[in-house]
Structures are given as structure tokens and as C-alpha cells.
Image 1 (cartoon, rainbow, N blue to C red):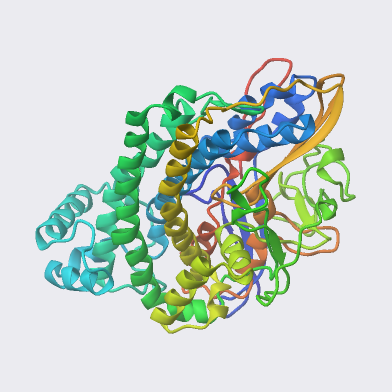
Image 2 (cartoon, helix red, strand yellow):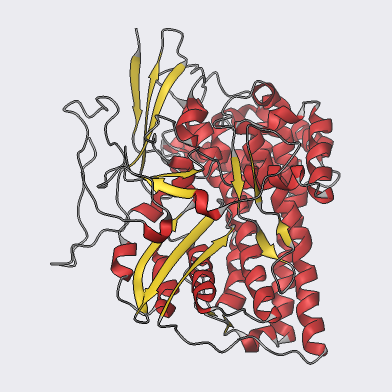
Length: 557
């Protein structure tokens, strides 16, 4: 007999997410529903405002993805205004975004996703000497690796356990049969979890050097950037490069080895395709390498049906959103330029469950040519791999060869996690070159950081970019020099989407179907797969009552 399981809220993410699944007598998930439980209403607030102000406002979609929305909004305005930023401004934006990638991915693996793979309490039984030997099998000079250090980590954790307060490690599923790492591997990765608490802040500092502050940077403007003095100051460039070196060292000696270590014991799940999800992948492309934005560090394109033999071009006219199963009025697919956001909340049934195929999420259903697509690190890596990018191919093929698994293992929860680590190394290896390009431009006499521009009477534009979580698009229409309509389709909207009119599940939902739970009372496997997408529901929690300016209150059953 089928049984319903509700995980609400999903923790270790940004925002509010509810997952409901139906399992059969063999504890295999046969159906799933993904529900964002709070609404984002900032697009409506933007109407009637100066389009140049939108970037500062849309940052408030989230407290983590602030720069991503800022940049996408500025790009949309530049498209509508018909203006192109100078080369130096393009480089500065890449430097800020590159720092975001490093800090965001490190934080995700260790602090948001790592505990889905690592049994923290089991690390107490590890032999520190064996842990040293194990770490050196994956890296010649592992990060912060010694018997003394590992013993100190165990002592620190023991105090947590004995006090009865595990702090950040509380309320987890320790001892679950789905954990596969030996005690020494758990200890190694746990030690880097603690190290990453300090290391990850370096990326935020790098962003602040050229962004003015973090979160919510303030140096982008339509046509360029304003952080001119920082970009022309050798000491500021040095501060950035010093932190870059530290972060890249952590990636090389902790992050990549830890992912390989974990993958060694979980590669069976990867080979079995657990958590694969929808077979389609989309990437807008990111990090422009020339002034015409024709050459991108991450190429643009789509992959259909997991066919890595070719990459298809993106036809932006085929991008739509619909609300058949979302708490908004209307059910017909709409292109973002003409998209509407009119709430129509219907709630759950009296038991707090989904009764059937009704509306069940504040998330719309983005579709490309009528089909669901996954976005994010795996999509970027797959598009780059299929495009023939030699660096990405080398990283991916080397990893697959080391683990002894086929390329099809990429289509899995493990593949999604590994792709994020590999692209962190890829981005980190290119950042110093952008600093050199910036210096070379200024030495050659190019000190332009802004292209003058004015708001047009009418116009429309879109900003398509690739923040860490995946393809992000902002669409703006301007009338009488103010915003007439504004729509943002964020990465987690693509991935968390509910069913569409044709009944197609969204990527989160599809990725859970077929997964067997070792213990239905401890749905660790659900968390592992959902966290592999790095959900950011915070883009969906902003509601202001225009009559009282009071944030509304919700109770989730």
C-alpha cells in the first residue's frame, strides 16, 4: 500500500521548501511533489520605477545570490538601452562572480550538502593515523592533515556529543544505512567542514573588494562599474590575489580530494543513476571573455535526452512559464516578457497533504519548448563537455577514470555534486588571468569603466547569466522611461518547478522517483538528492502587504 511522506521544511537550504513523496511497499519513491511555501512579489513592486534602480532592489530576492540578481538586472537594462560596458567593467564583473563561485560551492559542499554523505558521529571511532594515510591517498599534501589535528577534531566533537547539544550537527540521521563512508573518511571531511567555516569567508571578502560590500554589492551600474579606484590600486589587486591563492589551495587540497574520497564509496549510486532527474539540460553561458561576449568560459546551449554527442542552440522565444499547478492565476504558457504574477492561493487538503493534481507551489513551471530542463553546475559542465571544451573534458574524464565509472554516471546525484567541485577548480584556475588582463588594459592606457547611456522612452531587454546555482534570466519592458513589466526566472524556479499542464514533473520531483529509502522514518536519500541541486528558495519569500507594509505570517501544517 502506498504511503505518503512529507519533509517540511527541507533544511540546509536558502528559504522554504516542502517535499512530499509517495513510496510503495518496497520503500521506493513512485511519485513526488516539490512545493515552495512562500511567495516572492518583488517583480510587482518594481513596476513604475526607474529601470536603473531595479538592480539594487532585485538583490533582495535573496541574501546569498545578491550579486547574481544584481548583474542579471543590469544586463537586462543594458540590453534594453542598447549599451555595452567597457572591457574593464566586464573583467570586474567576472572577478566578482568568480569569487562568488568559489565561496558558494565550498560552502555548499561542506555546510549544506556534506552531511548527506558524512556520518559525523561515526567519525568519533576513527583512527587518526589511518585517517592521515587515507587523506594522502587522495592528495599528496592534504589540507590541515595530521594525527594531532584529527584528534583535536574528535575531541571537539566529543564535547558536543557529551553536552547533548550537537550544534550544527543536531537532528540528523546518524547511523542511517544509507551512509557508506568508513569512520576515517568521515573524520577527514568533517575536519574540512570546520576548516571551511573560515576559508569560505575569503570569497566574500574578494567580492567586497570590487563590489563595495557583501552581501548586496553596490558597484554595478548600467553601462559599467563604479569601483574604479579599487581596480586601479595595486594593493587592492594584491589583496584579491592573496585570497584567491588561499581559496584555490583549499579547493586543490581539500574540496576536490574530499569529493573523490566520498565518490569512491558512493560510485555505485552514480553508476546506477540514482537522482538523475529530467534528461534535459540548459545553460545560458557565463563569464564573457571578449567584448562582444561571443567567447564564454562556460558555453551556451542545451542538451536533450542526455545526448552528449551534440549541443543545441538556445532559442529564447521557446522559454516560457506556466502556473497550472502553481498558486497564480492563469494556466497558459507565457514568455517572461509578457509574464504575469497574480497570486491565487488554494492551500493543501485538511490533512495537510496534496489531494491530487491541484495547485501546490508558489513556484511557476519554466519550460523550454514545452519540456522541463535542469540548470546548474551539472548542466554547465555537460554543455561544456559536449561542446568539446578541452579543460572540462580533461577534468571530467580524469575523474571518471580515477573512479572507474562510465560517463553516464554524471546523470545522478553524485554526478551533480562532482560537477560542482570540478567547475570550482575550472573557474578558480582562470581568475588570475582576468586580473592580468585588467592590469594589461590599464598599462595600455585603457581606463574606461563605464559607457554613458540614458533610459529609452520604450524598450525591452533580457539579462541572461550563470550564477553558481544555474541559468538566471531577468526580463524587463520599459514604457515612458519606467518599468512596465519585470520577470525573473531563477535557477531554483527551473529546478523546483511543479508539474506543467502536460503533467511533466519538474527536475526535483523527477530526480526522486525510483529512489529507494533505507528507512522511511529517516528520508536521508531525499535530502541528499534535493541538496545536490543547492536549492535557493529565498528568492521566493518576500511578501509585503501594500496597505500596512507588514510582512505576512504563514503557518505550514
